[in-house]
Image (tube, rainbow, N blue to C red; front, side, top):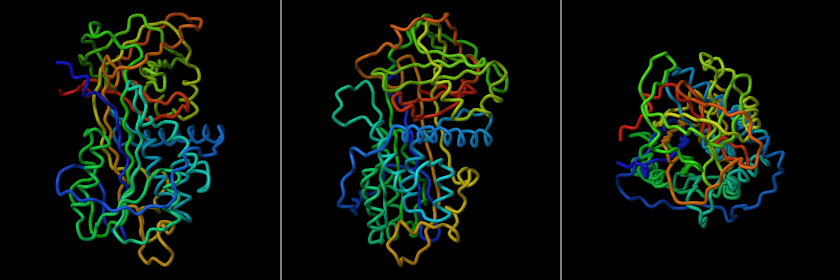
Length: 443
């Protein structure tokens, strides 16, 4: 049975639930009563051409990569023998919307943890520029590549949200505040948000916020969804896929379906014994970079990897001819990030005695806001056709470059992978496969 139409990559970071005194946030579903939210929005429209220098954008992209790896390392420490897939960019965007209302030590801790390199005045236009560069226009005719980033804020009806805050999120994130009555109908509000998330993620993520995650003290929920689908520029021939041995991180051997390109022209690099191969998607806007450390050195390399190291690999990629072997894989990650973000340096944001989100509300508002919960859910599926196939223009990378010695890239042991936007070098997704047998679709 051809399951290609169900293959996709997506992630949702957020819900960031901000209650007045206590409360919580968790996961999303799309059943229940139909509650139509109101809208509290700035009169300002989104800035579609923010003035951001190339250097500033590059510096923030590198900083985002460092946050991606900080978070990756944190999660790996918790579950070292498991596969992992996250969208750190989605988390950064969701947090940036909330950071717009942070002040004092809370503001400083969030900025340091997320590696925001600019102040409030400049950071939001920078993320706006990045978001606009990544997001596929709604009127795009090329259906072979799709990368959608969507932001939404949900607030308590009649709660005194700052007009200055609304201006910031409108100009830089294209988000108004959708109002719901958390106080009177928390479950209906949760289901409304869940339904929105399911719509944005093609029903791949249906329950980001779990039962009872919204309560009568919830005041604001920030959500960001990233949805991606694309076809390989050079699909793996399905007839060459066959069972092969994959050696997991713990040394266990298992038989998994291995895809094979016996002779393919793609960018490749080898730096200090670490192999990297870039598999472009049609349209050339994005690619998957697969990183294979030397045998027996995966954990040491992964622990030491930082943004400079990953971007050094990106920069070293050159067109080459060779052989690529990669397992098919399908798996998801669902994780609460409260403790991770506290451990990485922003504990005050979760503490009602210390948190300062006074920039979210009009002056004189008595309630003390804090982040109650941060949830992240993601899903990835890779097969011979790519990461969800549609018709499109294909681009073959490197046909005009001088070939190096033919390479052999056989990912039959633990590897890292990143899905990146090629123009900006932005890491949209980051993952590890350390047990290919556990990453096989049940479909």
